[in-house]
Amino acid sequence: MIAQNVPVTTPLPDTLASAPRWSRFVAIGDSFTEGLWDVPDADGQCRGWADQLAGHLSERRTAAGAEPLGYANLAVRGRLLRPIILEQLPAALALGPDLVSLIGGGNDVLRPSVDVDRLARDLEGAVVRLRGAGVDVLLGTGMDSADSPLIRATRGRVGVYNTHIWSIARRHGAHVLDLWGMRSLRDWRMWAPDRIHLTTDGHARVAQAALVGLGLAPDDAAWDDPLVPLPPVPRIRQLRDDARWVRDDVYPWATRRLRGQSSGATRVAKRPGLAPVE
Image (tube, rainbow, N blue to C red; front, side):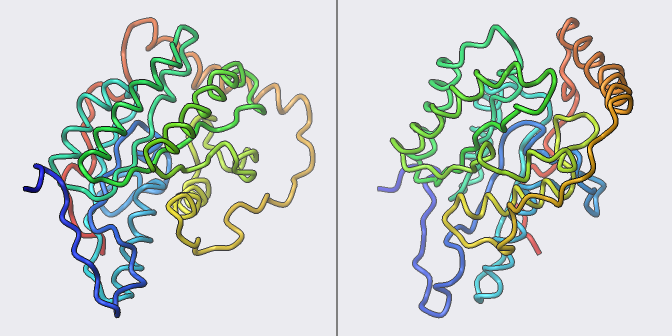
């Protein structure tokens, strides 16, 4: 008997052997996976690395003569890991995926009181649930914040969480998108003005890193090459940029925290159902 929601994988004919084996991909998580602040798609929604990854997988499938990839993105900005697991994970399983990207915990780690070990236990429970349903899982490490004036205070917590992620992946046969190891993300040109989310180029590079994390060849061999260095920024300009960042991004975030508000409180998933990626 086949367990409920376990995808049935039909072997591809020899002519389709070069196609990625996944046919139904669901992305769950927070703003990182939702795609802030990539260019908008035809529906006015930010695309993001997960949408781009789905496009790469679908293109490879159709080039090999297989059906386009079915894709859903249930990620919502501002979500903590527990709501991702409680709300998005069941919805993802109901879609019958054979690949799920589960990347969350970044919003939790920003909080000094976070229990990283408990965060890891929750994440592992979700991975066990997915793997038990026959689903391949793509996890993601946190990014290295060594160069960020304020956010680098979280670097130690992120490092511990990343260690848990690699161990969880080893124990349960999950894939890992290694954001911490990306050299290109140490360049501020990869980051939006809020210094938390990626630019379009940053999302494109992360999509390539996701292909590598899934054991596939990237489309661009130079996907993680560092950018050509820019001249040093004058100190006065750096101070002005830092002041603008605190005023426009840090202060509103801190205010929402004090009020118990989330940036995604009224938002819903941008792509809630599986649909072919053309």
